[in-house]
Image 1 (cartoon, rainbow, N blue to C red):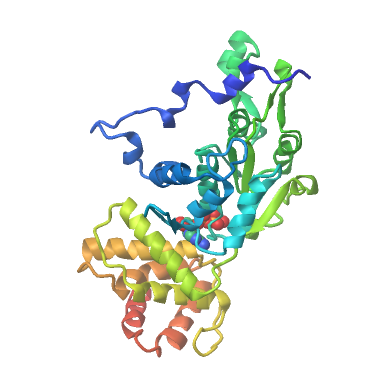
Image 2 (tube, rainbow, N blue to C red):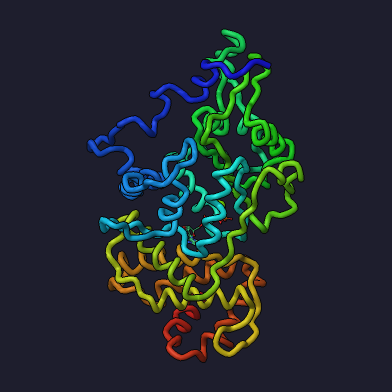
Length: 393
Ligand SMILES: Nc1ncnc2c1ncn2[C@@H]1O[C@H](COP(=O)(O)OP(=O)(O)OP(=O)(O)O)[C@@H](O)[C@H]1O
Ligand SMILES: [Mg+2]
C-alpha cells in the first residue's frame, strides 16, 4: 500500500468553494449567512470568546490544536479573563469530567461520551470540537441505516461511470475529511450504527489511516485528528460496541446533575441563551417556575419527593434536563406572545404535562397521582396545581 497522495488529501479536504461554511455568503438582506442561521455552529456563536482565549493562551498546544488543553477547559467551564473578557460557561458540572475528556483528546485515543439522554453529550462534543479544531461540523449521525460510506468514503457515481475510479470521483466522509485536515470528527449515537459499520472505525483509530483500495492509496491522518463519539446509555445493547472498538476509546460518563441547584443553574443559563438566539421577547426568567419544573422532573425521575420523602411513581419518559429547558422556553414563548409578559404556572403546565405524559394511559395515571398527592397540598403550588388540572381535564 502506498503512502498518502496529495491528491487524495485534496479530495478529502475539499476545494475552498466546497467549504461553504467558510465562504462569505450573504442573505438577501446582505447579512452574513452565519448571523441569519437558525442555529449557528459553536465556533461561529462563540468566535469572539475563542479568539480572546487564543490570543491570551501561552501554554503548550498539542500539534494541530487551536488552543491549549487548559484554554479549552476554560472555554468549556467559563471564566473571567485577566483583561475582563467574560467566557460564558458551556458545560455546567464537574471540572474533572471536562479535564479527563480534554486530556483524552490530546492522546492517541478517541473519546466516547456516554450518559442518559439530555446530559449534554452532543453539546459537549460540539464545543470540544469547536475549541480544539475550530470546526464542529465534521459530523456523522449514527442510525440503523448509517452505511460504511458515512465513516469511510463513497463515490460520485456519475463521475465514477464516466471517468472510472479517480480522486475526483471519490466522496470523502466527514471522518476522512477530518483525517486529511487534522481536525476532529464527531460521531453521534455510535451504538445505533450497525456493528460492521462501527468496526470500520477500528483501522481509522488504530492505524490513523484510511486505505482507498480502488485507487491504491491511503489517506493518512494529520496531527490534530481525533474522534469524539457519543452514545446513549438507554441504547445499551442495541448494537453494543465491539471490544476491539471499545479499547480504542476512552469512555467518559456524563452524569445527571447532582443537585437541584445545579440543574436549576443549567436550565436558567440555557433558557437565557436560547431566548437570545431565538430573539424571543424579553420575559423575566422566573426562578420560581424553573425551580418548580426542575423539582417536578427530579421527583418523578427519582420516585420520591424532595421535602418529605413521599414515594411517587415514575413515568415512562426520561424527563431530562434538556426537556426541562424546552418546557421553560415554550412557557416563555407563551407568556411573551399570549400572556402578560410574565412566566406564570399556566404557561408551563401544558409543556410539563406533554413531557411527563408520553403514554396517555399509564403516564396519565402517574401524572394525576402526582398532582393529587404531591402538588395539591404543597405550599405555593396551588396556582400550578389548578393550571395542570385544567390542562389535563
Ligand atoms: N451539565 C450541563 N451543562 C450545560 N448544559 C447542559 C447540561 N446538561 C444538559 N444541558 C443542556 O441540555 C441540552 C441537551 O443536551 P444534549 O442534546 O447535548 O444531550 P445528549 O446527552 O446528547 O442527549 P441525547 O442522548 O438525547 O442525544 C443542551 O442544550 C445542553 O445545553
Ligand atoms: Mg445527543
